[in-house]
Amino acid sequence: MNISKYLWYLLILTIPFGVRFLISGPAPFSEYASIFLYASDVALILFTLSALPILIGDARGLRSRGSLIGFLAFALISVFVSSHVGLSLVALARLFLLAVAAVGARKLLGDNRVVIATCLLIGFLAFAQAMVAIMQFTAQGAVGLGLISESPISVFDPGTAKITVEGARLIRAYGTMPDPNVLAAFLLVGLCALGYLFLKADKGLYLDAFNQNQSVSVNFRRYLTSGLLYSRIVIAAAMFVVAMGLLFTFSRSGWAATALVMLVLLIMEMRRSLRSAGRFFALLTIMAGALYYFFSPLIIARASLSADEPSVSYRVAYGEIGLEMIGEHPLLGVGIGNQVQAAISEGRYEAHGMTKGWEHQPVHNLYLLVASEIGVIGALSFIAFLAIVMWWLVRQRGSSEASFAFALLLGLLAFGMFDHFLWDLQPGRLMLWLAIAVAIANGQQAINNGTK
Image (tube, rainbow, N blue to C red):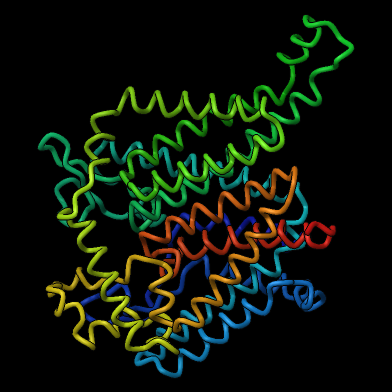
């Protein structure tokens, strides 16, 4: 168990650092036609191997195994209809490793101390990424972290994502992620983890630091000398920095998904303690108010939305391509990892006026992308698996860990409505299956304890 625990922490540590080695790929280079070995793949393999004995010894313990097996079975079958078998085999291998790791981690994550340590690590990594994002926005370019996968972004680079504010072009922060939206998702995960820690510390502080039999002055002195008080202050400060980093990604999907996560955490905390929920609401209100006060021109400029805006029109076009592919390949899809290549060979991008290489991107919707690659039944099996796990979490009462798991998974799945990286980019799929692992562990624990 100790080896698995440390390998789990190592796997989390690799999420924001996309160090990779090109195994094979076309010329000119295409991200979605290339095969890479990531440093995180090594950590994933090691953790999966360490978790196998636990998984084998409790193979029947997972109540939702039917839908998960169905999902993986259709992913496997889709390889046989793939036109680029190498891409499919690599994508399938990663999917199986992630699924096995998530299921195998459920006993490890059933220990609340491991969950707290996981959140501390994620919170620290999110804080570091937010600091990089702030420095990138301040410098309007990269800050010299290329060795740990920072993209060579610049305000003068036409390939760097930007926004326009009063005629000025400003970059969107990347951190060490491949895209601002991927960074936004990681900062969302970080804020959720820090929010859980804040509520956990808040609960412990008021349970442990105060004694109803003591005077107000004695209780207040205990309050000031409690280590948990300073933990809350540090967590709150870290949340503000991470929220600022999230702002500089200018990811509207990230902003909306994070607002949803914080709202869910707040509502679920209200079921346990109105006083604690009130303090959390006050923290969120102060953070949001301060960020709006200092950066309202940037927020207002980015918050506006137009159907003619490229980020909107392209998403609509990619969605139409996804629906077309699902309509023509409903049963088995075009093969896992093959959506972009199949769309190119079938002339779908050209039919939608996308003739440039950089326009050949995946469907910007997690669910349409999965359905187009492994078929409708496979995608429905995946959705059923997620729905079962989330239902376990909803039915729980009084568990901070269940609230954290539900909010985190819901936020990422909401983000998946508008992007593809949770399925086909390494940091994204690691984040998704991390959330699934935490959700399985807490949901399964409730089932085992007799919660219905």
